Amino acid sequence: MSSTLSDAFRGKRLNLQHKLLDFTSLKELPDLYTWTEPDEYPAGQSLASESVPVIDLDGPTAVNVNLIGHACKTWGVFQVINHGIPTALLHNAMCTSRSLFTLPNEQKLKVARSPDAFEGYGFARISSFFSKLMWYEGFTNVGSPLDHFCQLWPQDYNMHCNVVEEYKKEMKKLAERLMCLILRSLGTTREDIKWAGLNGDFKDHPSPLNFNYYPACPDPDRAMGLAAHTDSSLFTILCQNSVSGLQVLREGTGWVTVPPVSDALVVNVGDMLHILSNGLYPSVLHRAVATRKNRLSIAYFYGLPSDLQISPLENLVGPSQPPLYRSISWSEYLRMKAKHFNKALSFVRV
Ligand SMILES: C=C1C[C@]23C[C@H]1CC[C@H]2[C@@]12CCC[C@@](C)(C(=O)O1)[C@H]2[C@@H]3C(=O)O
Ligand SMILES: O=C(O)CCC(=O)C(=O)O
Ligand SMILES: [Fe+2]
Image (cartoon, rainbow, N blue to C red):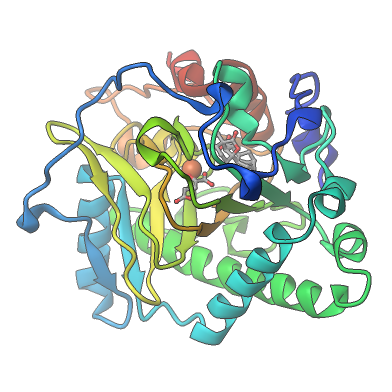
C-alpha cells in the first residue's frame, strides 16, 4: 500500500491494545465503556416521508443523477439497490468478517494494529479522541490481505483472501459508476476534469476496507458503538447486516437511523467530496449505536490517489461563488484528520 497513506497515521498514539476486552465474557458495562455525557444532538423522530432515500440503480440514468444529487445535498447519505454486486458476494464478505471477529482473542491480536500502523485489528481508530472506549472491534485492510489472513486463518486464508479481493474489485466498479453519476449531478464529467484518472488508470488509488464489529451489548443505552464522525473519503460504500445501528445526523431532525434494507448498500458523502463540491454536498456526521445483537458492517472508503491535489470543481466556482476550500491531497487530509478529527475540514477552509 502507499507509504504516504500509512504515514498519515504515524505518530498517533493508540497504545491501548493491551486493554482489549473479551466482550463475550461481559455481563455488565465496565466503567471505561460507559458513556454518560449527554448527547449534543437529539434522537431524531424522522417522519415516514423523510427516510433516507433508496435509489434503484437499474432506473433511468438521468433520473438517478437527479435523485443522487438531491440525496447528497439534503441527506449526505442514500442507499442503492440493484447495484450489480452479487448477493452471494455480500453474504460471503459478511461471513469472512464474522469468522474474523469470532476468532479467539489471542489469534486476532496476532494482527493487532501497532500504534504506527494503518492496517490491522484493534480499537476504533478514533478512540484516542475520547475518554471512553467504544463497544467495537475493527479490522482495516488496504493492500493484499494475504499476510494478515495467513496469520488469522493458517488453513483457510486462501478462501477469505479470494472473497476480500473479489469484494474490493466489485466495490471499485460500483464506486466508479457512482462517481460518474455524482459528477454528472454536479454538472461535470470525468472527461472534463484534469484528474480524470478516476476511471482506474491511477495505480495508486487506495481504497481502504474497514470491517466493523459491534458485539451484542448488555446495556446498549449507555454504550457507544462508533462515535460520531465524518469519513475522509470521497464517499463510503457500506454493507451492513440485518441489525440496525447506523445513524446519520439530519439538520433540524437529529439522529436518523439508516435501516438495513436487504441487499442494499449505504453510500455516504465524505470530506473529499465535500471539498470537491465546494460544500454543496456536505460530508455527513454519522455514528453507530450499540445494540443487544451482534452487528457487522463493512465500509469501503473510496479515496483518491494519495498525492493528487484536489480542489473545488472549476465549474462550481466563479466570481460569485469563491472556492471555500484550498487544494489538498488525500494523504495530507488524512494526516489532518488523524490530528484534528472532526475539525479537520475547518482547517482546509480558505
Ligand atoms: C482511509 C481511511 C479513512 C479512515 C481511516 C482510514 C481507514 C479507516 C477510516 C476510519 C473509519 C472510522 C472513522 C475514521 C474517522 C477513522 O478514524 O477511521 C475513518 C478514517 C477517515 O475517514 O479519516
Ligand atoms: O458500522 C456502521 O454502520 C458505520 C461504520 C462507519 O461509519 C465507518 O466504518 O466509518
Ligand atoms: Fe464512517
